[in-house]
Length: 379
Image (cartoon, rainbow, N blue to C red; front, side):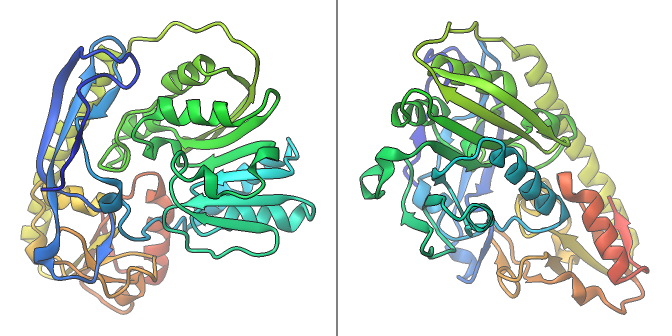
């Protein structure tokens, strides 16, 4: 057991008007890879509730943060992430921030690129598992925002708070946004990117909500939380169907907006997605049973964990392949499958790869076929 924190009330309304939507029993608690024995892996029931008054889907039982983020596992690699970085940097540069606090800076890529082009900028990163130690322009603090502000130097003159694909990881997005608003002076800005979770679920992407993305935090709910906390939306931009960029400014007061109710729409959307994967795993298992060659599964991530959980015949899968060199040679958490780079498929003649990579599907498919044109891609 992991001593879960329990959500008994809606994270938007604060009311207990919730209904159980779906449950995945004994799901792996960590999205990533492990070098420990398989019997050390932890599993918990993933219980999803939906708020009758708003329609937000939220995880009932929250896993402790030190378990969820027990290791570094979030490299933003690949063509889409490169384009996202470039687009978000352009968006950020429109506002010319000079004293920046970044929440969840990961490997420091955003900070390094921005300070390279803006020599006078001072940047502080707060990140629970930093993969970057900092430099003269970039100060790195190990910790969680909201718990460790006292460790951050020179934060009183911060003019902009930045975060990218971080808000959806917060256990209490309303409190997270309120903390940002409290931190900023009037006129201070927050510029951030969030995944377009509505499009993710509509497109049946497996990584929409899980033990890390603990609520279906869509655009209408983000808009509502921002305005409720004196943060005026001054610009919004869409990056493909992948992300939404926001620029907001702290103001004296804003009219509190009406909370939208998406209950019927979001309930149907989620349950249809689960039904789709029940049928999809049956289809993939038929292909596995009929195939006599080598079978690989792409993605040392929740993409693969979910398919295996749903009953994918993993005994006939040789390896998981993934582009992360940090995962190579390690075991996909919650499974007995080990990870190799896609180049392991070079020269193989009778080979198939199961590919369910969400927003990264097309770029990975192209990459695999360039490595080995003989690969059969099962999408």
